[in-house]
Length: 375
Image (cartoon, rainbow, N blue to C red; front, side, top):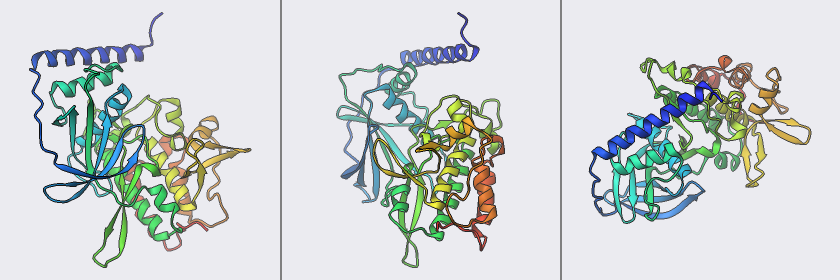
């Protein structure tokens, strides 16, 4: 049976990548892993999941607080998630106040360690890449391999917990909307599609202002499902080129996934849809309870009888479905309502891109009668 053209091309691409990796590894002498004194002191565990463990830590030399995420490379899935996060964060040449910053990434084997660099020719790094491509462990399974990500420390938890533990605030909603719009434009300008934007993946750093008040700063984090788009054949200097990068892997969290992601043919406009879900839920405090964790989460959805259905899934089944915005008994500025409708359009071509969003949201948020507080 003749394989589909797309699948044949993908298999050829993987085969060529593996062949190139083999040649690189054969040309390089295996470097000795050099033991080093720990640069960081772990203070306490602050988060744990199937992907890894996150610690609060301090830099021994300066005393600065950082977050350290420890990922065990015991499965191809963990390796792929870790590499995607590393590739995305290490590809960014500058910093943004609303995007988590990667200080460094350390590859540990047993008691020895080495720093990982983007595009490294280290055989150990290439073994991780080969594991990701093959979908099976290609290094010695008897050795304990870990990746340690050192990033900003965020002391305010995540956006979901922060908002649900406080009364609705126009000031906070406006600030968060502007910060997220700016962060997404920065990522897309750097050719990064996040693919898993949701309140749980947005962290809070609480900084003290010159006036002495505490202001929350958002940090978009968790880049394990992200994609750094190739600029081959495109103009990398043109920010909107990220919207011409088509992806086919359906991934993300169902309540924030765009209709086209469910179909498996999408661009960076899928991030716009996810942000639309977040903003609508934030403004109206729309929540649902996760079946597995029983945790209350911010997220807009469609009610079908006794069941709640993710917006993207519902719009895929019925692209002409009219969304009830606002969903609760309250008024909403017409420009704000129109923005949310456009961001949640079933047709990605009708959504604004991240750069239009970044330029347009300040005007909408500043409108004197713009209702950004649920009531």
